[in-house]
View 1 (cartoon, rainbow, N blue to C red):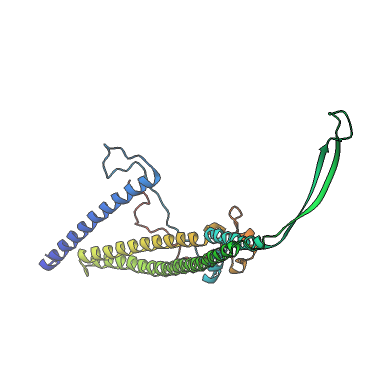
View 2 (view 1 turned 90 degrees about the vertical axis):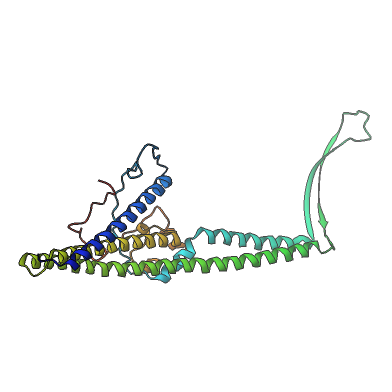
Length: 311
């Protein structure tokens, strides 16, 4: 008799909303499991239920800290390491050498030769008698006029070289945009994780106070359930924030062509000269950046579900 009709209806509406959301989440879960099985090439038996995948997923969404590396350092590192830029730089170098070859078509050329000659002496009566001698000399050639073929080919190669340089500049701008976008999303996700961690702590305290108030008679069970629902939403938002952080981190790793474990411990170690490129090469990992931000790796939540997708 302590609950009104309004509270009952409110609870039923909340239950219906949560059941609909649970159905959508289950459908999304099945879709993601199917996509993961295709990506990993895991055979899904035909007689198996869609809710029983042939694998078990366990993951840890720990978010490492960025240390003190600036976005400009990441941009310089990406412009140094991206293989697309290295390929187009080699193409530009080849184009420059080809232009030199085209211009050398009308230049006089002098060739030196030496030969071993064998001939028969006409004064001798025997046919098989022969003599050997060496001959050497210089041979000069000069294509005075080739119908402007060499000049035309040089103009064609010069235009192709200019086009390659424009493509390189566009690619550099595109790579720089990818790095800055990934870095911005990473910082946004980091700030979101910190705020959601604080929000989760507040929700946990709200649940404790609601339970104490319900036991003392100052609150109803509906208040406790609503506080628990808010705590669950806060935990879900924190998990999504960690997921976005890891996605942004993977995009940044792709943009700079370097794994996080190979990042230098400070921004001074990121340089664009050849020595720095050798130091940051894959296979020679440097020390991990020290992290002092406990909000990025909070302690395990007491009532959180297990990391496995299915028990």
